[in-house]
Image (tube, rainbow, N blue to C red; front, side, top):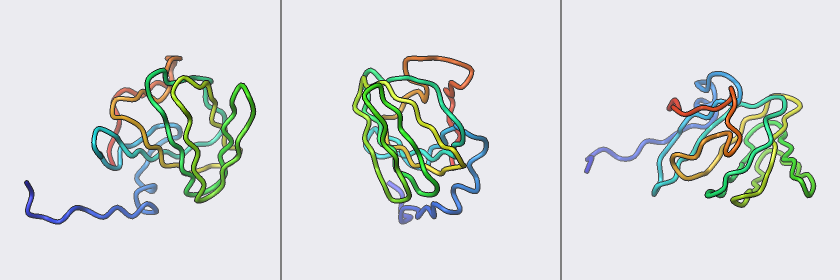
Length: 124
């Protein structure tokens, strides 16, 4: 076990190191979960995560989560948990900074592989 105290992550500075849009970056690992940061803008693909819940926390901007049953709008400081198996599509009309909480190994595009699939996540 390390004798150094755990690091403190300043989210504002961490988002400066997040490269590209819709590319999750791992900020921390926690009990088999990962805390991921992403800058998003535009419309992502419809998808679901069959075995994992996924939480979205907006830090800056606005995020619209579209579901087959309706829409949820999130602003700074707001959180939404998408239950496993629920099809959804994140949309940001302007650049938005989000934190995602999900099990390690969760693929960003879930059950709908595409050119946006990211399998090796950079770290901040």
